[in-house]
Structure formats: structure tokens, C-alpha cells
Amino acid sequence: MKPPDEPLAPGTTLGPGYVITRRLGGGAMGSVYEAHRNYGDGTPVAVKVLQAPAKPTTPASEADERRARFLREAAVSATIQHPNVVPVLDHGIDAARSLPYLVMPLLQGEDLAALLDRVGCLPPEVAIAIVVQASEGLAAAHARGVVHRDVKPSNLFLERRGDSPFVVVRVTDFGLAKALDASPGSAEGKGALTATGRFMGTPQYVSPEQAISAKHVDLRTDVYSLAMSLYHALSGRPAFAHVRSFMGLVLELTAREAPHLQDAAPWVSPAVTRIVHGALLRDPQARCPSASELALALDMAVGIDTSRRPITPEALVAHATLEAGVRRTPSQRAPLAASWEDLLRF
Image (cartoon, rainbow, N blue to C red; front, side, top):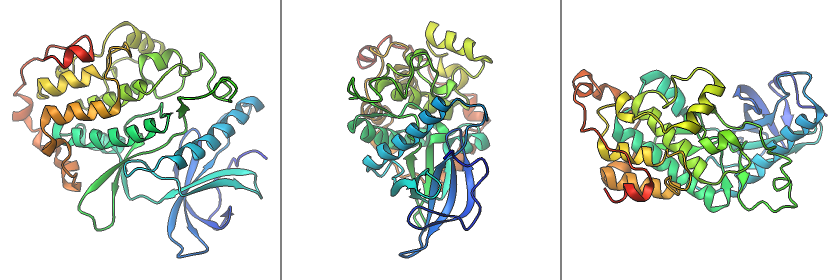
């Protein structure tokens, strides 16, 4: 049975007793609904279900791939238990509709993309604190042998927990995730879910090697995408926002390094600028090797009291600190390193 073309109606029951309350939104792969359990304490949850392809003429093979990818997202996400990753509480296939679903906590807050749309850019100390928490979540995924492949501001959720005075960053949406240890006989090893030459990811945040082949990437592609998210948070836009076509972007990614961060955000310190660019190097062999090392470098650049400082809701709207006077006071121009090892010698 194919996924639903229309949103699930309030009152619909999925799986063992998740009753749909309302649709919250969705993306290319799935729709997300608020629901409550009709057993236990009735705690509200978020339920993601596979939705029908946008094109009604989608080939059966592509529809099968979408289903397999959704099921893999549920299985992969359920294995990663970390405070900075959105957990999967339950997953399965609704027997009545043959509809895959996964269940997550109903988080309160917004994603980093929505915040940046509203405020433009963030003070460096706030942007760094967000990315350091996201680095911890990605490191947990990488330790499980999982590459996210779609790290971007909209997949970094800023959760506000009830009466807690602090915001927690959660990495979400493992719909494009890849297993690092895929064996030749597995679906991933055969390329059944990642055909060579097919673009996967979000163009403005994807690494050069992923733009060429999403199949042949490792955890360093996530490091690049996280660093590009930091570039955006510091400057108000991703590095290649000026490029208007997809092919033009691929040429930029593969032909030259990212434009100097201080051209867009001259107030960012040389130390932070060099780290961002060290994680954005085109050559994966020269790039920052891991999310953990990126976080450590940021710790060293600004001090652990800043990089690991708890994030308050007030800090997320403190972009007023980037007032005109601050913007008119550029930092010393940072020389950029050709490799991560060179950067560590500065």
C-alpha cells in the first residue's frame, strides 16, 4: 500500500495506539504529526510517517527506495542515545495502512534555520556554543558508525525544556544517514539506497565530495556541513549563498575554497575563522578529521567557559550585541591554513 497523499486526519490511530492530534509539518521524506498515546499517561509525542512522493508518476523503484530509507532512518536513529540527538522512542509499520512510522518526543522550541531567518546572525559565543553541542551529538552518531549526510541549520533543533532555563541542541533527521561499515552484500554496500551520481543532501551545506558522490563519503562530510552551519550562524549566510544555480554551486565547491569568513563577518576572531575554514577545506584528507576535534578546537579558541556555556533563550535573541559599532570593528585578518595540521601549528 502506498503512503497517504493527504494528511492523516485527527483521530486516526497508528500502530499500537498513537492517536493523531494535528499535523506539525513535513519535508521531502515524511510528514510529522502531534499525537498522544491512548495508553499509559497519554504523553504527547511527535510521529513521523512516510508521505507520498511529490510526483504522482514516481517509479515504483524510487518509491521502494524511499520506503527503505525511511525504515533505515527509524532503525538507525533508535540506536543513537545521546542528549544532543533527538531520540526515537518507537518505530514500526502500521499494519492497517502498511505505513512506516517513527515516534519521537514532542520537542518545544525551534530549529537553528528558523532562528537565523529571524535574527540574521548570532554573536560568536552563542553560535559556537550551539555548534559544540551539535558536535557532541554527531560524534555519538559517528561512534555508532553512522554518517548523517544532511547536517544543516534546519536539522539542529534548539529545544526548550519546560521550566529549564537552558536550551539543548538536538541533531535531528537521519533520513539520509549512511552506515560506515556497510558490507558488500548489504543494501547499502550494493548501493541500493545510494546510487552513484545521485545528489543527496542540501546544496548550500553539502561537502564537495558529497556533491560528487553521496555514496563515497565518511564522517568528514558531516564535519564540513556542521562548519558551514557555523559559518552561516556567524555571518548570516552560508559561504556560497551568492551562487544561484546548482551546477554553479558544484563548480564552486569543487574548484575553490570557501570565501573568507571575515569578508562577510569581519568581527569574528582570527582563531575562530581559521577553525571554521579548517573544517571547510575541500580535501577531506586535509580537513578537520572529526566532530569531536572540531569541538575541541573551538574550546581552545574561545575558552571552555564560553564554548560549553549553557545556552539561555535570551542568548538566542541577543544578536543586538552585534550592533553597528561592533560590526565596524573588524578583527585582525586571519591567514588561512592549507590543512588542519598546519592550522594546529599557528
